[in-house]
Structures are given as structure tokens and as C-alpha cells.
Length: 131
Image (tube, rainbow, N blue to C red; front, side, top):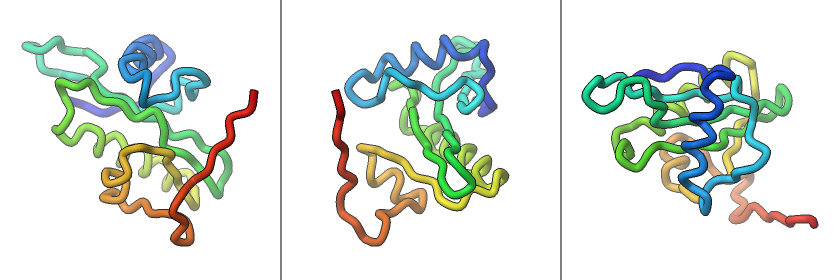
């Protein structure tokens, strides 16, 4: 398995992967392909070249970026792929001198293990959907 930056040519595979998680991931308004890192299966016996994971870093300013659209195919979960994708995003955020990185997630314990925590000990992020 290898992790690399996505290109425009990878975007349809990213969309197909994210579409497998309709109840967990926002399907509309995805970041641009260039904001994604992808995990590629390089094992010839399992379909070499297949996108098996993705994660995007959306930079809003020097102060704030968001890790989003993290997905790994079910058959490849539990192998550390999500961790590697998040680490790639965090490394890019550091490279771009971003001060804070957030994630809106249902996988709280996963992100806590990566050093994420609530802001000023807040317990909830509140969301209002307009329209």
C-alpha cells in the first residue's frame, strides 16, 4: 500500500469510495481532488492500483484547516490506513504553517488518539442546516 497526493484523474475513484458511506460522509461539496491523499493497493493479488482509502485537507487560512472525507474500504479497515492518511494531511498542514486543524467526525476516539481534542473543553459542536 502506498499513500500519495491525489490528482484530477483520481477524483472519480475518490467519489466512488466516498459513495460507499452515504450515512457517514458528506457526499456533496467535496474538496478538490488536489486536496486529497489517497491510499493505493499495490498488492497484485488484490487488484493492484485500486484506491482503497482517501482523506482530504481543506485549508481555510493560515490559522485553520479541516481534515475531512476520510474513508477506507471495509476490507482494508483496521490496517492503519486511516492513520497514515490523517498523518499525511497533518504533515501537509504543518508544511503550510497551518496553526489549527479540525475534524467534524463520528469517530471521536480515533481522532483523540491522533491528538485531537475539543476546543476549550467544549463538549459539543453545534450545527444548523439552512434551507
